[in-house]
Amino acid sequence: MGENHRVFIDNPSLNDSQCFDDDGRLKRTGTFWTASAHIITAVIGSGVLSLAWAIAQLGWIAGPAVMLLFSIITFYTSCLLTDCYRTGDPVSGKRNYTYTQAVGSLLGGYKVKVCGFIQYVNLFGVSIGYTIAASISMMAIKRSNCFHNSGGKNPCHMSSSPYMMMFGVAEILLSQIPDFDQIWWLSILAAVMSFTYSGIGLALGIAKVIAGIGTFRGSLTGISLGTVTPAQKIWRSFRALGDIAFAYSFSMILIEIQDTVKSPPAEAKTMKKATKLSIAITTAFYMLCGCMGYASFGDFAPDNLLTGFGFYNPFWLLDIANAAIVIHLVGAYQVFCQPIFTFVEKWASQRWPESKTITKELKIPMPIRGFRPYKLNLFRSVWRTAFVMLTTVISMLLPFFGDVVGILGAFGFWPLTVYFPVEMYIEQKKISKWSSRWICLKMLSMGCLMISILAGTGSIAGVILDLKVYKPFKTTY
Image: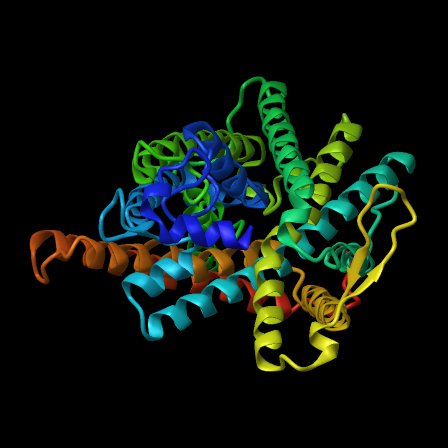
């Protein structure tokens, strides 16, 4: 296969083959519909659960308006990013297979290292957020059944730490799967689960509004003073920006999705259409979930929508939704952490190529017939186990789902969704400095930077306030 691969790269006359693309790789088969499905699957995740809380802080006017603003910004910058898949000519230029490779090809220098650092820190943070979210859902199942078994007499307080440890053990086992392509089934299962719990949350919100004889709670300006102090209202409004930004964070994998799309037509043309459809569907879904959640709970909308229905019937439906969240997060954790695993393992093998601890693999026969032998690598097993243990311990020390989501949204939104796509587009299209288009793009970038700073400030303030009353490993909910 290696010899054939080189033949098709070195011989241009063979590059028009039915089997290979212009870069010598197997013919890509992705279409507008598969790209749209990938984007929707990547976008709709646990971030949807905090949108009702975010709208509750901003109110009926600012809440939907801010969500619409983020969708427009994300769509526009995603279109800029799609034009950076190929360097130079949009049809025949050199392909960039990953986000970081596109940054390296177009911007180069220290910006590649900065981009890589931000990406990996963001992925590390996502793994912490997912551990917290999974424990909340496991606790919700336990509390719901406890509450109904006691007839509502037992408040059913419990600690989240044991549930985080359970989630950590599951992730340690799954993290031993060597390669990303071997967990495709986990990714598909996670996608199905995300639509399951999001749909149940939406349906319960609508049902609760109908049960209230069509009464929509909430106000035009958001959570009322008295429920919170003026300072809290400001901080919570800023954090709401981060929560909404997190819900739209998918730019870091857009280039990878584009690399699955066939041509002609040009990949950028297909991706722009797919992005337009995907963000339209996602925004409509987010609006429904967020607005119905706010209409159901008003000022008391929880930062995890499904926990707000905790003691309502049918409680078995809530148990299904929370179980779906846990299953989704088990898979999503692996999808987001695999790039970190691969990066560290590749770096270690290049740094110490002679070390058998790092490079040697032992083939262990599987007890089930038809399964390939498991490849055990000592460094991989120890490193991945240590990583999961670290994220679990940090989650136990900072179990604040909403605040962590806000920080992740603030930290990743400006650099990954706005700054790098804008800078790469300016370089790709050779836009003149101080031209009207250059000024507009720079103003967009600076405006989004200010939004990220405000969102980050509000989320960090929320963590500080929560830590004043939280005792690690002891506080119960």
